[in-house]
Image 1 (cartoon, rainbow, N blue to C red):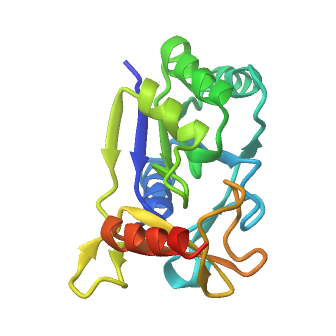
Image 2 (cartoon, rainbow, N blue to C red):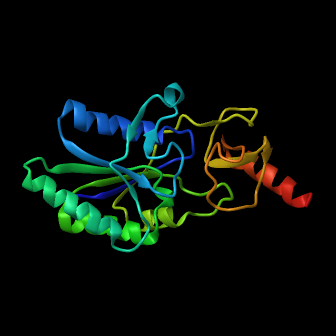
Image 3 (cartoon, one colour):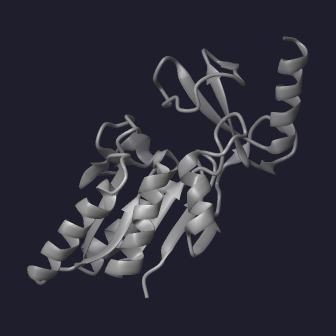
Amino acid sequence: MAKLYYRYAVMGAGKSTQLLQIAYDYEKNNKRKILCLKPKTDTKAEDYIVSRLEDGIIRRKCDFLVEPQNGWVYDTIKKKILASRKEGKPIAIILIDESQFLSRENIWDLARIVTYLDVPVICFGLKVDAFGNPFPGSSHLFALAQDIEEVTTRAICRLSKKPKKATMQLRCVNGEPVFEGDQIAIENELDIIYEPICLEEYMRLYDEYMNNK
């Protein structure tokens, strides 16, 4: 029976790289048909899923971008699954990057896909935003996914004196940490970058910022 999977980690932990490796194994090594998707909200690299390795050379074009409205994901993917089965080349798996940007309705549609169409869905995304708040997509994936796992992370906090695992992402604008603003702000737009950071250093910077307001 197919499952809905959620693989989460901070930015820079290798989520997109893992997704692209799975896609490669299915398509190139096993000759299986797949779907690679990401939310339309994610405007980084347009309609490509991109690994941070090799300065973004490792990438794959999405089969389509996900719209947020209720029923859209289920109806769109159902048509593609049924058509692929009719052609004798059934879709074996669905891989979704930046899943934190999916809507609640999208996640429930994905649950319907694994339930009624018996095709596994693996979603990759963040746990929380740069302000420590859950995204709608990740919240509902934590609620509905049958298999939840943290991606083995390469992301280490560079601000800590001792090597520590990064569990948060720090938003920086023009090199300065910020703790207020829109939940969605795409990296490399408007001089925004994100740094993987441990909880201790995040809290220290956050409290310093709040005390100086």
